[in-house]
Amino acid sequence: MESLHHAVSAVANFLWGVPLILALVGTGVFLTIRLGFMQFRYLPRALWMIVKPPKHDEPGSVEGEISHFQALMTALAATVGTGNIAGVATAIALGGPGAMVWMWLTGLLGMATKYSEALLAIHFREVREDGTVAGGPMYYIEKGLKWRWLAIAFSAFAALAAFGIGNMVQANSVAEALYGAFGLPHWITGAVIAVGAGLVILGGIRGIGRVTQLLVPLMIAFYFLSALVALLLNLDKIPGAFTLIFTHAFTGDAALGGIAGAGVKESLRFGLARGLFSNESGMGTAPIAAAAAKTDHPVSQALISMTQTFIDTLVVCTMTGLVIIISNEAAGGLSGAKLTGAAMSHLLGTGLGGKITAISLALFAFSTILGWCYYGEKSVEYLQGSSKTLWYKIVFSLMVFVGSIAKMETLWAFSDVMNALMALPNLLALVMLSGVLVTVHRSYFAKQG
Image (tube, rainbow, N blue to C red; front, side):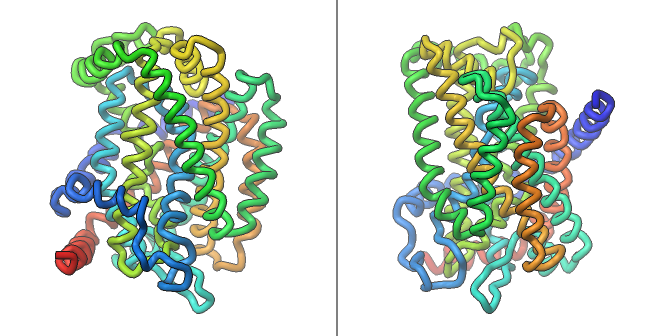
């Protein structure tokens, strides 16, 4: 097992070298410029559309299976997960507080990337006679680039990635957190989550949408308010935390004992890797859910999809990062969910923080498992047909249990490998189809005046 862990980690480190980092950042910069810095110009409008969706977002009014809001909540369900609690903690523990700067960068640039993915997914989606919808990178790669072989490769990577980032990593983190907070055995946690997820998953995207539109807003509000209370109790330390973040990002000075030796390279590597793990911008997953939305124009849903990255990285991840840095718990050598739980307990002054973290992580992970099963299912559907996905749902549910008792370090490395393999063909497609993207984008806003 140890040799397997080293092998997978070596592949992850190779893939997450300079080329992929440049590809991710470069694509974000490229799309930001081509779209006229639209994420900064239209973010307020996009946030307003969440609160007050368009009138055409009514059952039966346009093609699609779920509402704008349900599509966003399904995508958020898949992204707001262990990356926001365990992922941020791992980034800070291994890359130092400066990793937060690079996580924010993935968020700012990722909004343009996420917008582009969703727009192309809807523009090239397939609406079948029975009203079901299929879309995502595999469809805009095949229809836009005419490279079916690359679409097949993306689908295969996505179907496998779902077992890592969207399944076993989630179950493992929850099992660890609930065992630490409540003494609940790992296998019990895995069994309960596996059964619960299986029951929802069998209902398809409509069932997932109904659950996530209720669960996701509540779980984000619960965690956000808990972290906000922790920060308000330590309000005087927040300015110093931001100073530490920016200083470490560009100088590499080791400011926390637990991350001694973490320099700029480590901050960059783990900040970008965990940022992508959290918001998934550039990986091509969220547009699979966006493609199912009822919408009369690709831009409408693309704007709403863009807010997913903002909420995930620039709001939720920031709260986690500040709690950890202010608490200085990283100096104790902790990492992952244990570090976040210890930080919350430190700032709240009681063991309550660990329980809040464990409950939040359980909710985040459960919703992520639901969203990622849909991504994997649609990928298998593209490869084998819509009538041959039941086996995938069953295996996916069973692997939740396996993940709850597996070794976490290997799972994180496996997830990094799959993230990279998904990102590469999707980023290539986004750049090569940017002409189509800009044409659709400009036509929409030209009509808006």
